Length: 226
Image (cartoon, rainbow, N blue to C red; front, side):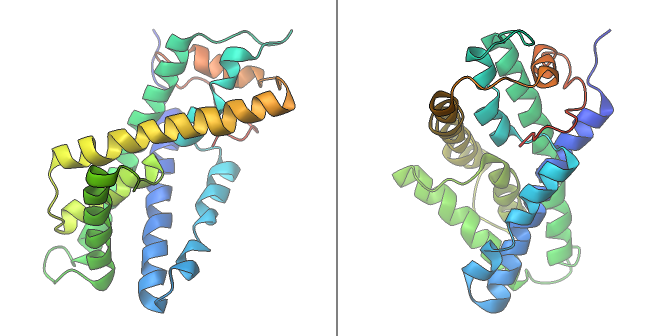
């Protein structure tokens, strides 16, 4: 019987947590130094971790996997839309708990288990979460990476941001995910595929997509899986 292999779930959850770590590090450094550029310079370390450790990140999958729908060669098979949607869904659902778990742990640390006032970093997270969600509701252009928002908005809510669950999903997570889908798929993945020709898709990656409806399938090996 098919099942979701544990290492696939763990890799995806860790990817969500790592994005949370990187985001909280950016905010912490910005609060301490007063310059956001200082924090921003540290954010790429998460991307390096993802590449080195073979993490499954939904934003990268939104970009790369559609190429397998239009590319085929002697060693690969064309992938159907149902398999692509299933793969996206599994990775999204596995990134989500990792991000949320780190948000809970960070909220506990920043409030000393609820026994102390919210720290300066926590206050900044509240402001960012509220500003992003409220601004998106009015203007529709305050999104980030959907994986970052899986951590950022829940962290702000846990620390005291005046946001409801419906606000979080309807005015942030869902629109940002759709924006990542359109931007990543059309303006990055498919655009590069068109510009450079139909690049061959790694056979193992295609196999992963074909089994995504029930499993994240085999470990992606040495290919970049952002």
